[in-house]
Image (cartoon, rainbow, N blue to C red; front, top):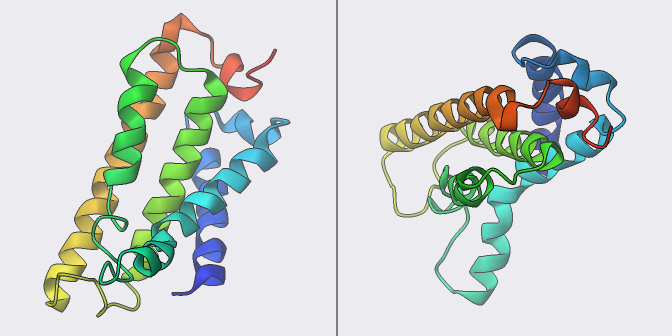
Length: 162
């Protein structure tokens, strides 16, 4: 799947997940909704940063398991949720970015065969599905933490500056 395909998959899935799966579906009416959609788009394209890395580090390769995994969102998760200083704008952006990466991984299931370091198609599918599921669990955890975060009401997550 190419960049346009990843974007065409990510944006509708983001809108549907906010509307039907989120604890704050009012986020669709937020003045920051366009920003969150942009963050989802960045997340949907982020795993393909390996194209640029391969130009610097020869042999890194496209569809590298390091970039096509939950590693990036997990590394962001630790500083965002280790301390009670996370701003709702950061949390919502993190969720949008992570969902974008998850849709990228599920989108790459459509055309497989190029995952660097993993040559078996079955193992590729397992890699994408397991990482996608773990990202979904991470999203569920952050959505759960949003409600508990600093005892803030959910309205703070719709308009973080109100």
